[in-house]
Image (tube, rainbow, N blue to C red):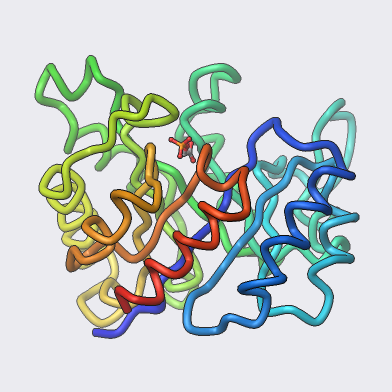
Length: 255
Ligand code: PGA
């Protein structure tokens, strides 16, 4: 089954609008028209409009890092799916572990966002993954199952292939401690099996499952060669054009 690889840069709370434009320009200078890999840049909200302008006419896509499930209203500090759409945003990261940890986001709340994103034709990048304590307690697969099933509740078969899932073991995020390819592949295969139970083989084979957690050019080829690893959600290594471009090239080579 051919699944187009995805390389998504999660810039987190980094880059002013000016810095974001400079980084986006450096990236499109080399891979702007690359179509063999789906490339998504996710700058902070304050830089979306400026980066959208840079990406005009390019193949590179724009993503938000979060959104609120409601359409509008008294939700100070939040933005809606529609607001993102008007800035030419096509993807949105949902349920990132930093939001689960620091903002108390639950699977039920993340699920509302997934459904709202799909209703507005935004492609969710749903993040799932266990903490170190959960891994050490032997509950990795149970946690991942809860995150996947909770996040996808009510997602219809005709919508599932627009969802991207990112498996991000929390202990590997920003720590330099990458999961071994065997550890990552085990969880990716488990997620694929879960999707097969929920949606059947044909649809489950089409869903892209990304790995995230200290992925960089030096370890990407090995991870991307695994059967169920369809790309990467990249934090640290996406903040510098050279390493991000090298990751895109690694995904292209692994296709
Ligand atoms: P990292 O972050 O690549 O810096 O580990 C990945 C993520 O949190 O999406």
